[in-house]
Image (cartoon, rainbow, N blue to C red; front, side, top):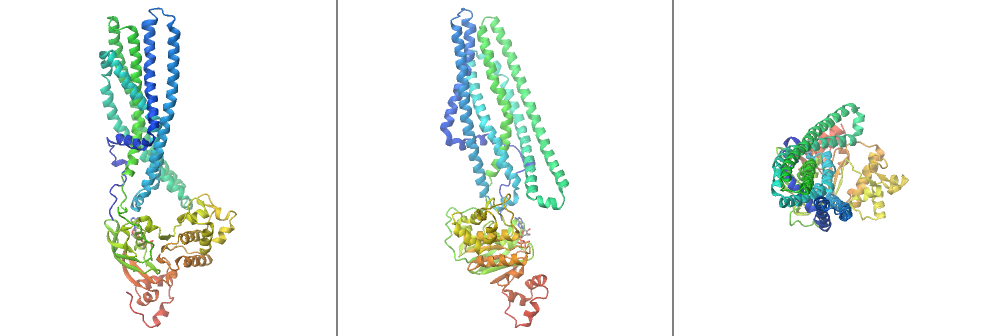
Amino acid sequence: MRSNPNPLRYAAEVNPSRRSIWNMYKRLLIHSREKWKTMIGAMVAIIAISLLEFAIPQLTAFTIDHAIPGKRYDQLPWIAVGIVAAALLLSLFTYVSSYLLSYVGLHTINRLRNELYRHIQMQDMAFFDKTRTGDLMSRITGDVSILQQLVSSGMLQMVTELVTFFAIAIYMLYIDPQLTLLMLATFPLLFLFTRKVGRRMRSSFRAVQESSAEVNNHLQENLSGIRLMKAYASESYEAERFTNRTSRNMQASITANRFTAIFAPTIDLLNYVGMAAVLLFGAWQVMSGELSIGAIVAFLAYLRLLQNPVRQLSRMMNMIQQSAAAYERIEEILDTKPSITEKENARPLPIIQGSVEYRHVDFAYQSDVPVLRDFHLTIAPGTMTALVGSSGAGKSTVAHLLSRFYDPSRGTLLVDGIDIKDVQITSLRGQLGIVSQDIVLLNGTIRDNIAYGKPDATDQEVEEAARAANAHEFIQAFPEGYQSPVGERGVKLSGGQKQRLSIARAILKNPRLIILDEATAALDTESEQLIQHALSQLLAGRTCLVIAHRLSTIQQADQIVVLEKGSIIETGTHEELIRHQGRYQQLYELQFPNRHTQELQQKEPLPSPR
Ligand SMILES: Nc1ncnc2c1ncn2[C@@H]1O[C@H](COP(=O)(O)OP(=O)(O)OP(=O)(O)O)[C@@H](O)[C@H]1O
């Protein structure tokens, strides 16, 4: 099998990319495109805010330069009304822009989160083999939420600050180019400083997010395996491991905060240097009569307005870098392409009869460790084939290939003579029923769980399937019957009851092909009989591939395939293989010492196994 071309990277390998901030904005814009009208509304409000912020100092300058020297008492009320009106409009537009941008932001983030979820779902099993659930969860929840913070409040602020900055800078250049250039002289330094610290900041934020994903992983694994932890009384051991992880997370946060803490005072310092220069030079110009007092007061007010966005932007740097680090982790998933994909011209698999052929199949999970070698097997429609062999021989792998969870590295797999790589994956899996020993019950009612493969099933169909699977009686015994909740917070079911539910689920789906991963755990005789009866209902007339752990249940199989180290070493019926006295007979002897073997040996020898 091909190894995943783009496995997710981890902290140590991370080198923050220069492009990720732009990529982040690009993707956010793509997702916000749909709401362009709202964005235009918000932009109009932002421009209005900038104009109003610009108008207020103008009124101050007018008061100082004209109203006061000319003793124009009549103008004072108008100036006051003007300032209050401008302030009212400013509040109104701030509210409008803030609401509209947060609306767009939340919408954008929602779309991004859904895109990410869909992309994760599309990944092949090799991706899930390599990636830890806690890590994926922290990317979908934690990292996306960090971006949410940027989009909902930060983007508004950034756009407002940038518009204000340019509007004021242009106006000031027009009023007094010398003074403005003097003031702007510190800005290249600011830019260089931001760039240098920004990248280091991002990798430290990245480390924070990686370590918090580790904390998530620990929680996810521990809480879902709480019984194991309690059974082995490993609480203090796990608590210590948890403390180590949270400490690493804390250390990473401390480092990241150090950068944040250096940042703001440095920006302030550079701002004050600029201000001192303006003040000295401006005062000198006033003294020499080149500039009015009103102009210098207004200029200083603009300077504050100009420095504000810079100060805000520098504070936001923290948020931007944190978001860029989060975005890098999101992008890694979005850039991961599944290796199991449909061909462009894939067609739906027609309703099948159920013949299966593995044609000289080789397979490896990791390219240097072969798992199946030249595996060749033909299964006739409506028959039962059992796979037996030592643990790790490759039995489950044979079944995984049929579900197209993985693709063979060589050879082909045909269903009804059609290469499964040529058909749409959903149409293949739609005709396949899997009854596995680790039964997954989802949060929902018993009915939802049975109807999982056929959501439009009627109540009658659900009940028929449950009856066929010997599950109806115990379901009825619950106070809420089919509507009883199951899953983490639902009714508690025994192992045998869960198995019967999963058989009912498969019966309702009515597939032509069944993969049955037999339970290893022995059940009590009554449950065993109920399950065997349910299974016989399920298997009747269908093609069935059984991964057999207990040889008692497969003696009626049409063919038994003995696998060792990924190759078939014997094939035949139960009787044929017992007579052959090979590996199957050994396995059988191990499970049932002295049973049948002697009896069969006394009969006429059967033809040799194929
Ligand atoms: N997802 C995986 N990634 C890497 N190696 C795997 C993976 N799944 C199985 N293997 C390896 O492939 C080999 C065959 O595994 P498989 O599960 O098919 O054996 P099995 O015969 O079904 O075993 P068992 O009877 O114990 O369930 C084993 O060596 C196993 O370690």
